[in-house]
Length: 87
Image 1 (cartoon, rainbow, N blue to C red):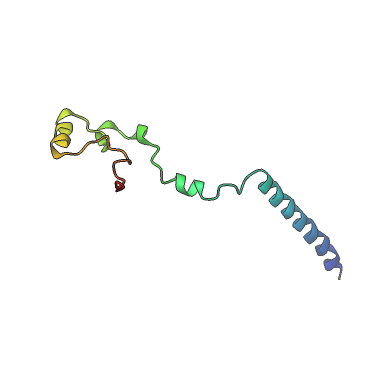
Image 2 (cartoon, rainbow, N blue to C red):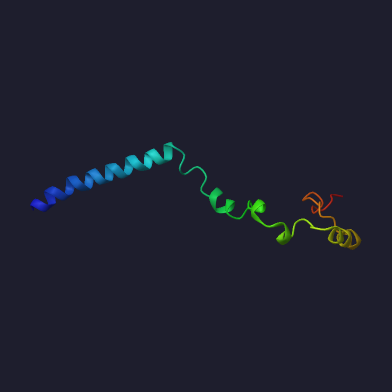
């Protein structure tokens, strides 16, 4: 019976501490953007770390650019050209 008299106040203190920490986290915006970090890891932000000879986004010499132009592709195409036209 003495252990119950000890554990009940300890449990109440822990529950109160949990509620206080949760309310602090909500108040400080810890739960505002739950999906942002999951999507952010997919973005390629290390282009400056890729060596020039290993890059695939820019041709490194003029022969590659000439081959792209003769094939009819443009390396500067944007997302606006991929959308279907209305009408």
